[in-house]
Image 1: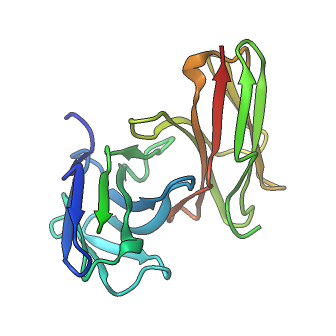
Image 2: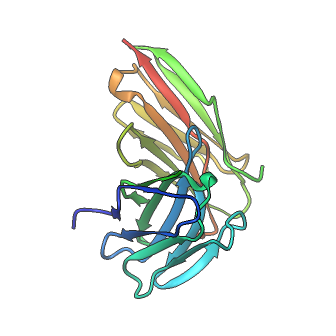
Length: 115
Length: 111
């Protein structure tokens, strides 16, 4: 296994369009996180899953954002009716809960630009 | 403290100098404190996972300490090298639920 994979690496879209990103975690990892990062800030928590269950979604996240992890493996993050303020790096990370010294493994991110 | 706070925001250090920075985190429901290094054009990578009050971890020239009662951790870099230039992130892991990051400390090493 080569690590956490995210697609696409870059996405340019027009305001009002819908976009979907995919994350493939490390195969044995049961937890998956989505974060958003803008210039000069640390990763901002969006949502996380344990297996297929979405355990929490940030209250800062509008209803335009939705995430799924249908079979407890890969996950998708959809943004509907994109706005210029959605432009950011979207990071996915996975971990194995219950492992001693559990830590996050990150993908390379998807850079979204909304024009 | 409700959020994870890091200071300073940025730091410029001469090669060979030692440096340190701070992470403050909520001490209630503490489970673990993580440090990550994020180099430009790469993904964040874990440096340390710390769980016990008084914990000290070391990896080469980098070390970290943890005080869970007062909610702070220090990261130290001894004899800074150009390859240490990166953003250093700390993250609080409370009650084994979500992991929340600070804004990071951006470290630049001057040759």
